Length: 154
Image (cartoon, rainbow, N blue to C red; front, side, top):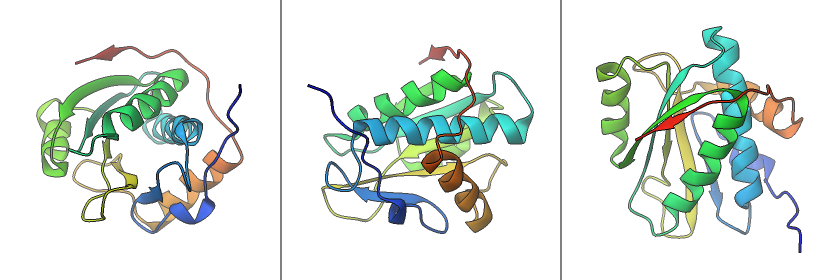
């Protein structure tokens, strides 16, 4: 049984990405989001293996989503540093403290259960702005991905 890609374009918002998990995006969609984000990070940092801090919130399914996101990031060449269950400010702090190139936090923030999403940023202290989200959406939906091989550490 093969599952088809599902990723609703309307989930790409001005400053982050949000979907109802399984209804608007599935695991393959999340993996493609990771590939899109990894491609974008590599483009902006001009590094073959940029370091990306990744964390997830308390929702029961967030670790599964983070796993798919990491798979996509790793396939582009990004090196992942997974800090596990965390709050968004902890992920941003880790980017500074560990001198990483980017962050990706799996969270639906204040939205109710069933929602998922990713807050992300490349420039230290800043999350994606509307123009970066537009670029990410285009890369992801057009499947214009960089290929590479990253490594993960926790």
